[in-house]
Length: 415
Ligand code: ADP
Ligand code: ASP
Ligand code: MG
Image (spheres, helix red, strand yellow):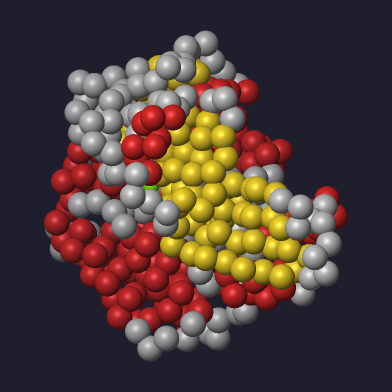
């Protein structure tokens, strides 16, 4: 069997859902398990609901109405009035309303997970019902029944033993299964999420446990390119990548593959195909154990909206290991992802991805131990297999704040 993953872009409108159905009917002999993300930009929209609720803003219901109207338009385009899916969708939306009925807990990641997770439940409910409607029988699986996690909300960690047992028990590999990415469940039955873009990782978990022949991630691009086409013109496709190179690219932020996706596939020698859901003639990019890499070709990775945060000891003492370990513990507590670290005698600099709702609390806690400065809205460019002259050209008019390089990789943080 195979595991397929369709992201939000593939189901952004009714035509997208019809296209997914066309792909599934073409490949139905594979009896795939199919992981589907929330539709279009619905995760962003639900994040806005969660934030407004948490901040007790007046526009929570406007923000929720946007989500409701999006799904209702979708349903009207795909189903006749009176179809049972209308009730199923409104029941899911009522779950959000219930969550919004009580006072927000101080724990934002918890509230986030209860609200944002509904996006994937909505999309899979709609796609599963549509497939049935056009004669493609399938089982809808609630991923929370099988993806078991700890209770680190917004970046939950998988309990592999329990997850393996549950997937083996609940997934019928002789049938087409439609399920959610990104979401899981704690032992106390609270919904968790695995981190933004986490559906690729969910798909890799299913592929690993089920011993899939391959994982196919269907994208709006023809494969893995040498750079993000949103920011770089003329990005060319890579035919093949080793797991090692793909892991490096994902780690540095090539957002076409979620970084956690690759390790379980590599360990279990399950090849990954990244291919287009638009142009089915294109075979995409293969990531596999014995594939070669192209060390002469540069890969450009741009991470936007970075925060540069520096800490220094209050008494101008050297910054040493014990300072760093306590700083890292605090960064982890606030879900700050460290993309670059640079140390000098008396300071340490971190380039971070951190939610702006967490930054004040993070800085407050760090300030109990250190002098802290920070600066947000920066860009981090990483170039693998770089040539100095190309990088210089790109940074021509930029104010560079931090640079780090080794023989294969250069990272530059700039304004
Ligand atoms: P999904 O619909 O699965 O969530 P994403 O939008 O997360 O898809 O990922 C696909 C996007 O990733 C592409 O549209 C492209 O803009 C971006 N991207 C970033 N880096 C690369 C790269 N190196 N190769 C291809 N696409 C990339
Ligand atoms: N829907 C989630 C997100 O947009 C998870 C995913 O699509 O991978 O981040
Ligand atoms: Mg995505």
